[in-house]
Amino acid sequence: MFRALAGVAAIALLATFVPVAAHENHALIVIAGKVAAVETGRLQLDSFDRTTLQRKKLWLLIDAKTRLRIGKERVETLDLRPGQEVDTVVQSEDTPDGSLRYRAIQIRLNQPKAR
Image 1: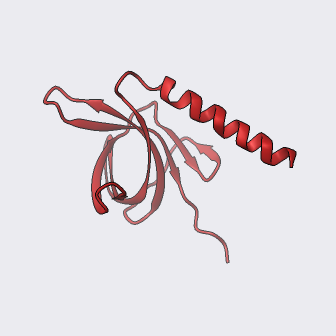
Image 2: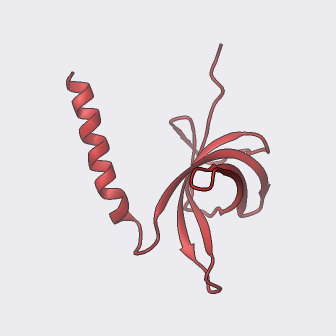
C-alpha cells in the first residue's frame, strides 16, 4: 500500500515539474516508435500520432547532451539500427522558418523480453 502511494506521489510530483523544465512554448514530449533511419547527428523515428491516427516519420536531432539508455541502464553509446523500438523524450523547438524541430533529450532502447 505504501509503495503504491509513494508511486502516485512521485508521478504527481514529476508531472508538476515537467512543464517547468521546458522553455516557454517548448514542450517536452514522449514519443515511442521504431527507428527508421540513423544519420550523423539525427535519428528518424516511425511513430503513431494519436491525434491524427496516422503513422508519422519524425527526424530527431541528437547531440552530446542526449542521454542514452538500454532499459534502465545508462550507456555512453547506442548502436541504433532500423527496426529497433525506442522510447524518446524530445523537446520541440521553433525554427527560423516557423516550423518545429525535435531535439532528443533521452533515447531509451527497449530490450526484447526474454521468453
